[in-house]
Every structure is written in C-alpha cells, then in structure tokens.
Length: 96
Image (cartoon, rainbow, N blue to C red; front, side):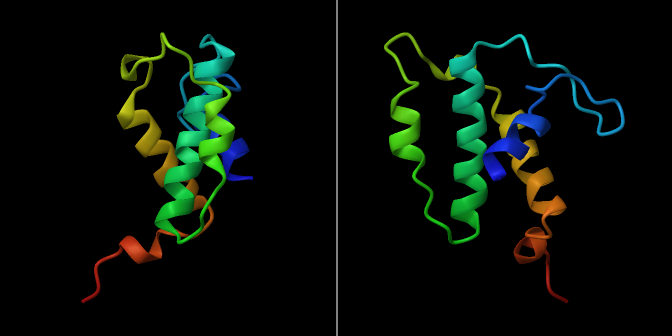
C-alpha cells in the first residue's frame, strides 16, 4: 500500500492540484519504480517494518542508473506525506 501511495505523492499518476503534486508521469518506468520503492523503504524502516525492497529494487537497477535520476527532497516529502496521511508521524513530534 505504501508503494502505491508513493506513486501518488511522487506525481507518477499525474498532477493533483488539490494535493499540490506536480506531474512526474514523464519519468521512465524504472525510475518511477525505484522512487516509489525508495519511499516505501524509508516509511517502513522509520516505522520498524522490514520491507523486501532490496530484492524488488534489484530488478530495476542497471549500470547507467545514477543518483542524479532522483530528487531526494521529493522522495523525503512524499515519505512525510504518507506518514502524515497514515498517522505514522507521531514518533517525530517533540514532546513537551
């Protein structure tokens, strides 16, 4: 479920003006899958879940893939939006 939500918040399904998500549907299938699974990995690990991301991602990585294909800010923003949506962000709040 988190992987699919990542596609939404990363703009892989097109723009969403209500959610203020820009259109990133133009990216290659490999890049979209790597981005979505990277977000899934971040959300899961921050919430003590061990995803099978490494085996899934291995099928999409190729020799010409570099970090320049990814916008780290967008990946982290999507992870934060998913955590907020699923009410998983409580562990990041400051306690008074």
